[in-house]
Image 1: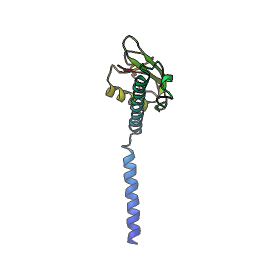
Image 2: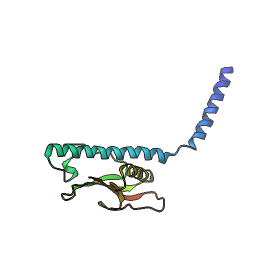
Image 3: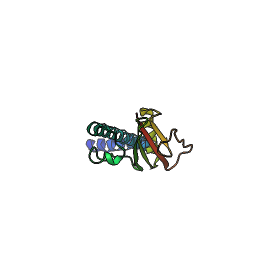
Image 4: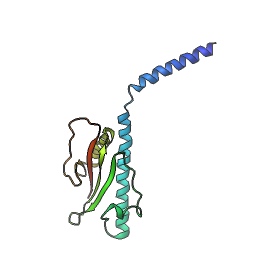
Length: 153
């Protein structure tokens, strides 16, 4: 009988703690961390493929098609984002990688976090590929139309 009472009390305490803990669980933050990992891994993967291409071909790629599938598989991106372009500028030697789409708030927060890590001049969250300044959304929305320009110098 004593074991039954202890079991019932344990289940009740667990249920209370579980309910109380769910108030502190921020699903957008968890999803944002996951999406930031995908974004950062995709950029590293493409950067590595660009380096491999340059070492083997003795030139820089002109498009994503130059890299996929011979030098890398298409990197996994968060829901709503897709690869748009990869361009090489002969004059400056810069490579621009553009991603775009309509993303939810947690993906937008992940992009901001990745931008803070990469540097403001290398990672632009704009409205078109090659933008030089960020687009700022003043209101929270269900989705954000974004185009990310990541520059490799």
